[in-house]
Length: 128
Image (tube, rainbow, N blue to C red; front, side, top):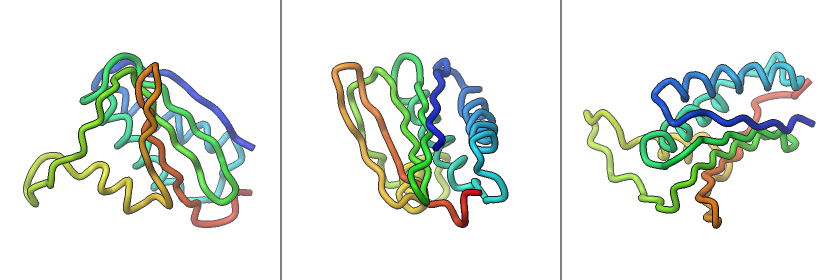
């Protein structure tokens, strides 16, 4: 059962670094031959939001949970502002809508150390 985590600096390159790490982690964890594009999109969106709207290091956790991958992204910011309705031609404001559409479940958990935004992304086939 895959369960791994890594910290990223709060910088513009972190979403791409987190995607590459997630792809490699899933592959080395036995998630081969399965399209993990949805998982990578969720990782990218949640890390982007943490970099742009959170504070401190961005901690990403991946864990296989049966037929889904759990993604958790933690930062030390304590405020969560729901996304504004995105304009059709706007440059942003759709990330969490994509996460909600792709994920089986998602949510936000506050703690003394900040907040974690999490999602459970279904895998489209067998994990081995």
